[in-house]
Image (cartoon, rainbow, N blue to C red; front, side, top):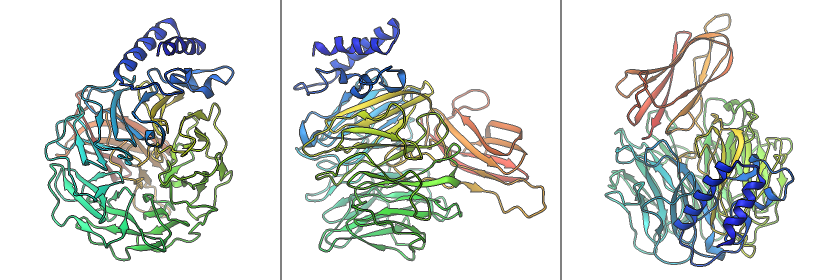
Length: 605
């Protein structure tokens, strides 16, 4: 371990970092190394420059800040080697309400760690799951369940049940939820509103037998739950939570698979009482290990359900009907990576939504809503994976600052993290090395895009197959857009839902009343700030305000005449006096042309 600090110094000096920053970086790295218990050095980190700077960056002439690893990273998640060292998708959130983001990392061998943005392990961590082998196959959700202003971490653990921790690693009262073997959870939990009270509900599935649970925040079961499914049905999916009928109560979109022969799958849309909506479930061919994605893909005001089965990718309307141009049957199974939805033009307006998907041979596809493949796609940067039913999913966010969504995804066989433009071209400076296990070709970690250190530029987080969490600090400005899908399950609630825009009524021909769209805030839930985006059809006078749960206007964000097109504003969680607002559900209200549009946004503290 004595070699690493010297090589770290050399690597930092090569980037042209100033002496003051170098001293800070050395100090942070030394503290970070001291905070992690390492039973044995791991090849490629403790004795290699790659410990701090990706080898792909060092191999490039003219290394700049756009392709170096962030100070203090990578950090080790796993204590295993080989297959079970694989890292799971990481999440960044302000857990302790200090206006600074923390990072939660999980590994297949059952380790959970929480660091600050500089890679310093936080008090109360790590957590080690009981048992051996593959113990965590899910990604955490982060929500304030107890109303104390801090976020809780919700994570299914195969050998321990549904775990809920405070930010300091202590267990929330009423949790965990344990199950008699062989029942065990695999997919991630999601958090939403499934009744008319102001508290969150938690939704998660366990297998053997397949049972879907809904709990209140205090750990009590919601009346009418759980729902049990017939024998031999299983699920690896994370439930999507979407308010389909706009009654302020979420419906559940849930995918299950038939473990018998021949394989088959089914997609459900259930109401808050667990009753299937008319037309559901819908049967699909092949075994589906992935989760559904939900969004208004064709911009008609109605939602669509996108799901990958064992042999095809398909899009369904809310009645369960397959949409024109679908399904798409690839050259290999598309079921292993959950599909994502995002915007790829003009800063990500939802009118330009497209679909990102991958198959087991790592062909990366971008589809448009009619099922056709977008120009420049597919791209292939990998060989076929040997045995991996939990491939990482693509994410969609602008990481090069051009206002257009990019696709970021690790590929297990090549042990790289790739980034492509919306036209399928490799972004400059990419890919980056992301070590894994070449025998099993494991790499479970989907990437995440965030402003981790709140310096208004982009950081990309991704866990590697050898059990480390990597962070790349990019020079591009961080701009979240309504069309982003920046993490595995889209948001901190794991909703797997890209919200549709709110529209005004249809404008009659010949009238002068302006039309507008108000998009969902991003991020949502948020802390410390969120981006508000709206679109005007023509020049108009607008008032954009924030309304608290009692109906009182607490902040005027914008007022006056605005030009036609896409407009953005940012709310920093403060009222007009500059005082931080308490956590809760607020409304963003856009008044234009005598009409009022609203969007709900959740402020976390």
